[in-house]
Length: 407
Image 1 (spheres, rainbow, N blue to C red):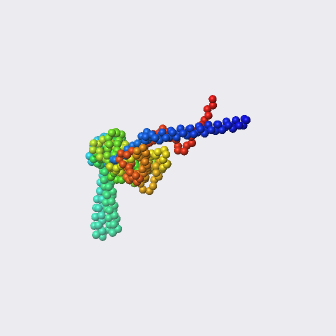
Image 2: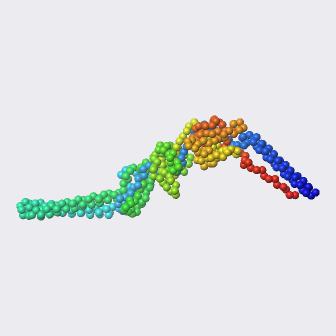
Image 3: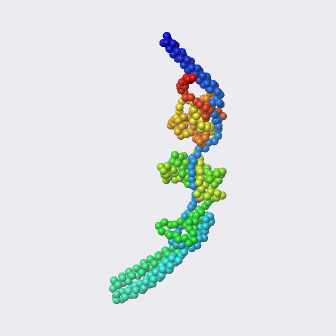
């Protein structure tokens, strides 16, 4: 009797569990049906396909420098006696900038001048002796050997005169070098010395002044990453800003791409020189510039938001990365040879329709659609960029098991 009651209880329990599972499945199906019947606007966020211009850029940082910056140094050592220019002074070519104490150099000139006078006196004596020796040799009172010695002594005296005159010329030049003159016309942007300071010219010439030739023309030395350098070409337009004028946009163009790589902490960059007009001279040497080098531009093209290239509905099959994110996002088609082909989802009626497209250039927010390879895509159509459901269960997930409550 007890066995029959136990079997009946077990049967009732199994039947109850089956009914509960069926009820839960029915409730889940009804919830899914209600969700699937929501309008698309309640389930997805959309953006419109537009027509416009798109510009592709390469960004970099750089430093504003004068086009011609001349370092003025000294060839002689000495103490600064007079300082005739200061920071920001405009100078002309040949203008005196600084004078060193010439006492030592003047003494050297006087000594060399005395050596020249002594050598010239010796030369006159040797020439007179040579003349007398020739007369005696002609009268056969002296030998040829004595005449040759006289000739050699006269030639040695001439050589000593040339040596002495060379020393005098060198010392006079050094005396002239105590007066430092500007080699170019420009503006003094740096002064490294002061009155009373001693400068020593040895193996490395000390810098006394830095003179910018023309501050109305500047250049920017920028560092472009090796991943982007292949897009940069000479003559491309450049837009940039500086911290001193954050609201102002300056313009320039690529002047030179230097081949020498710059390697810091295993990161390779290349110096791209940008020429800039500075007529009002608001750009100053040393300013940090934030550049956008325009590498490509398309006008009046079909534009798709980049967010649409990364989006896929919850029930769509996984896909590999798109060109818009460099293949890093694993929700787009894999790269193939030629143009990348991602898929966007277009709202048509109450249905999302997948459309495969070819991509052009991108500005980071929009991407130009150059060719539509599957279906059509028109201006004004809406493409899905985000799913608005708060929670989405994975496809094929099992229902939660029923739990008995204990009273």
